[in-house]
Amino acid sequence: MGLKEEFEEYAEKAKTLPDNTSDTAKLILYGLYKQATVGPVNTTRPGVFNQRDRYKWDAWKAVEAKSKEEAMSDYITKVKQLQEEAADA
Image (tube, rainbow, N blue to C red; front, side, top):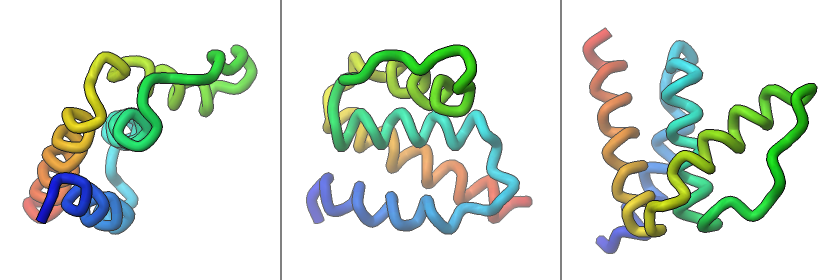
């Protein structure tokens, strides 16, 4: 299985993470997902009155130096880590 296929598999698994997964972890996954699928940030930062989208944009911006392959690999690692934490809880 190639990296892209494994990434897609873990993107599906991420949808089954428990509801109590922290917002911080969700934002990390979001940023890595966007970097892996879109590449570097290609939009302007949302305004101060749109906090939710601003946090998501910031999470994406934080990882824009990573290549798409690095982002995919880090995403897979993070999903595995969150699955293990959920299993231990």
